[in-house]
Length: 224
Image (cartoon, rainbow, N blue to C red; front, side, top):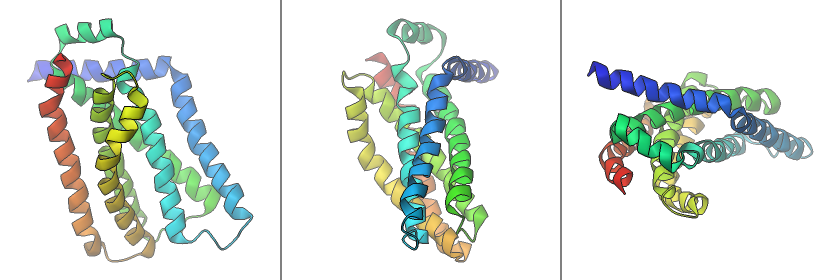
């Protein structure tokens, strides 16, 4: 058990070191968030009154979704075949996929938090229950990271991985996104938190199912 935890920690450290050495990718994601928020500001400042709370919420989740796709799509693309073969001799497939999922969760939590701060600062903050909204952001970051990491692994085996990832991610991300929109809308309206328990339970169930599928199916994908 201790050896597995140590190997998992080493794999996660490798992910952070790779990201730090390729800071242009992280800078590009930050620029994407700021640029998308600024475009929304320019669009809706010219037509005041159109940015209702539901539009504010929908726009933010769209920005966050595309940020997640751009951030996680490179999880396996940047790995060379020789390096993957080397990993195969060092760690189990479960440790490989779990380390990438955990790293992407940390990355998405940071991007979601930063995106919310910038978005609320530029376009205002209509959220009445901030804690519930932050909970929806955390659940969304975990769900996006878990589902898109597995899909990125599947798409990396194909030649046109970017297109395949977009196609495969739609049926998985769509129900998750719909539940997150409901929870975050309840937070904006300031409804009692008990109203959102069903949606939160569904999001947790989706996250758990994706994590379980990643744990069970990735070894077969890894050997292919």
